[in-house]
Image (cartoon, rainbow, N blue to C red):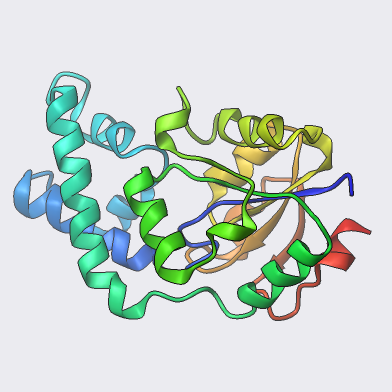
Length: 218
């Protein structure tokens, strides 16, 4: 099988982006005094946690240690709020099982730290489906830079052109495009219209119930 499936995590495998948004909104405004609105906070939610902090506060506000502390604190708040609701997006369990049975290599390419990725994979017992994981700690520059997805392809030993990316965010689709990869978009956090500028999208869907691995590799 020449094809490979590369998955973003948050908003793509689990519908949790509102919980991330709430955690960031509270930390940025209540703890750090950024005075950002809900939509403005949402606009900044891409890339590494440290990159988000630098975008909002500039490069000189926090030390690396302070950003790491804030990042971990944000993820702890998110996990506490989201854990009672933790579940895969409808249809994804069956999709992963079918793709795995077809020997389609799969990877996760996420801007999340491993603390968050482990939280999802281990609580949902889905680590077995993925041959490799590329986290925020594994790349120099995160999405929309293509490094995350190119590294996934390299580790799987699959040409970039034969990788199909599953994404929920415009910046993630842009990363796939920059890597020379097609994308399937999950409309969990963003509307279809927000992806209008990208020509590498082959499918939009709200979940995985109508997706077949066989159709996507054909």
